[in-house]
Every structure is written in C-alpha cells, then in structure tokens.
Picture 1 (cartoon, rainbow, N blue to C red):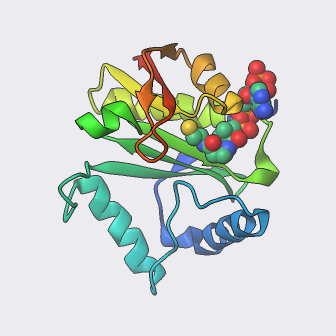
Picture 2: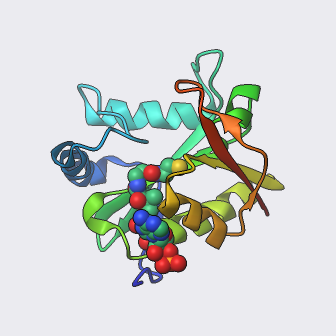
Length: 174
Ligand SMILES: CC(C)(COP(=O)(O)OP(=O)(O)OC[C@H]1O[C@@H](n2cnc3c(N)ncnc32)[C@H](O)[C@@H]1OP(=O)(O)O)[C@@H](O)C(=O)NCCC(=O)NCCS
C-alpha cells in the first residue's frame, strides 16, 4: 500500500482535461466497461459545467438526485473517479447507493480506492449525512474489501435491476 496523503479528491476542472482524457483512454484500451465517467461533450469546459450542474441538482431527470463528482489526483495524475449522491431514492436504496468509484487499472492495488472512500466520507459528513449506502456485486471482492475497511456493515441484499441477481448492500455510519 502506498496510498499516502498525496492523494486528493479534486472537483472537476478544466486544468485536468489532458489527465481526464488519459484516464478514459486507459479504460478504453483495457476493455473494461465505462464506469463512473462520461465522455466529455464536444467542449471540455461545457462538460465540467454539466458536472457542476449535476452537483447543484439543476436540470436533472426525474429519477436522478444531485451528485458530486470527484477526480482522485495523485502527483497530478487522475487515478480514480468517485461519485457522491446527496440522497437516496427507492431505486438507489436497492442498487447504486450514495457512493460509487473506480480506480484506473494501472493504479490498482495501492490503497487508492480505500483512501478515496475515506476522503469521500468526510464530504458526506459535511453534507449532513449520518450514514451512507454502498452497493456492489457480491463477486467484486476488491470493492467489498474497500467498503469493509471503511466500516461498511452488510445489510440485506438488493436485486440488480438488469440481471435480477442479488447485489450486496453495505451501510457506513458516519
Ligand atoms: C474495486 C476497485 C475500485 C479497487 O481499487 P484499488 O485502488 O485497487 O483498491 P485498494 O488498493 O484500495 O484496496 C483494495 C482491497 O481489496 C483487496 N483486493 C484487491 N483485489 C482483490 C481481489 N481480487 N480479491 C480480494 N481482495 C482484493 C486489496 O488487497 C485491498 O485489501 P487489503 O488492503 O486488505 O490488502 C478497482 O478494482 C476498480 O476500479 N474496479 C472496477 C470498478 C469497480 O468495480 N468499482 C466498484 C463498484 S461497486
């Protein structure tokens, strides 16, 4: 583990455009599905502005809730992306929860996801949340470990909306 205090959660900003593109390119090359990131729109500044609107809850579809996007940066490089939703809906309570994250393939196994979640919990606390829900595929042992290391306690399973299979749900008390 070398996740030291050099890792920060940054709000999206246009200074990180090249880094963001490199992050996406690495995922695309790895063949992993796009997770927790979107391709920037035609214009990167417009893309960042859209993420800021999501945080303020402006122009959201009915099913969506305000959510913050954080880019986890270490030594100027985006190593991961994390989303913090401000509240739950019945659908998110079953699947999705408050927080989702991913770490780029080349940066895994160094404790970054654990550190990202720990930092995000401080933001959740600042929002006034008393506990947060995280959900993950029962086969996703790395993610389950990240959640458990941050105090996650498993609840009854949810049902994956696409596959109908059980989905693990964990609460972290803040
Ligand atoms: C899940 C993910 C975020 C983990 O990121 P990471 O930065 O490599 O995680 P960390 O290094 O902080 O630590 C992961 C923990 O899981 C453990 N781990 C890693 N791979 C594992 C595996 N295949 N089986 C069991 N444990 C595993 C690590 O050993 C570590 O535990 P430890 O500290 O006790 O040794 C990363 O694999 C990823 O982005 N996956 C794709 C997206 C995803 O699944 N996101 C979560 C959706 S719920």
